Length: 385
Image (tube, rainbow, N blue to C red; front, side, top):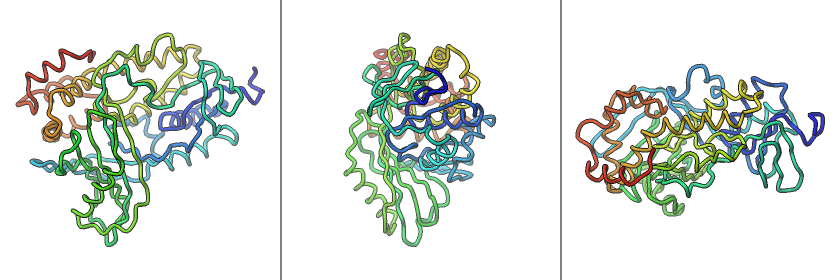
């Protein structure tokens, strides 16, 4: 194959979700001469809203996400049975539609392939509808792969955008309302006010299982809205999700060394082990990709980056083990209630995955919200390295 043939390209990105979409945007912006193809069978970006704190993204990388931001606030609130707090920290949201619009505008016509990958290899992709696309580099960005080799808890949710006649009364996000009934693990409701009469309500669970009863959660959202005395006249969007919260497991089992296909995003195991969120890491990887793409050892370099990230997440996996293995399900909220009594800078570094040594000590110091005996027993039984 040569670069002049239609079934050959420089870069084939498999998966048009967050990681794949950001990678395509970064390459289009910084390496516009490259022939980049994006393979996605459904809608680029999907039906998702991704939110992040200003401190999650390094200043040098903000050029990549700034055009995608659709909503932003200068602070947010949290509420627990024994604590309420306003945190003065910038908070922003990106929609799947914004990502789709940006990628469609950035890639020339014909570069987005609406098909599913039947087989992914380091230098080619076999498409479900027939045909082979060869490439100098194939990058697998298809999201969560097999997690059976990992020990996981789960963060799962149903989110709905509600139209509230007369207004909902919120002027900033409420990122954790844990004053709700505690069910199926740690439960909280997450609120994003999009405009005066539109609020995104996400009912979220840190649960021991990935099972999600969407109908039951819809009913709980309706009950929550009624408790707030909202007159809901329409549901204009709905999304669901189940994210792994990794408690333990070896990176080599997630991405074996013999697999020489480049990976990014959740597929590479690059996400916050405690929260399951991948946006900060997806931005960092996408921003670095244009400088790495000329190397013949791209897959090895991306795997080394992912392995280093996995090692840095060891502390957060330990916290996850304490949450899911040492705390009673209906008492898990106490861990987050205590956490939100700590300094704003520590909270910011935690969500960015950049906790320093003092932060780590501070999070674990003082009277623990879980049984020390159960925590030690849980850690002793798990391969959480």
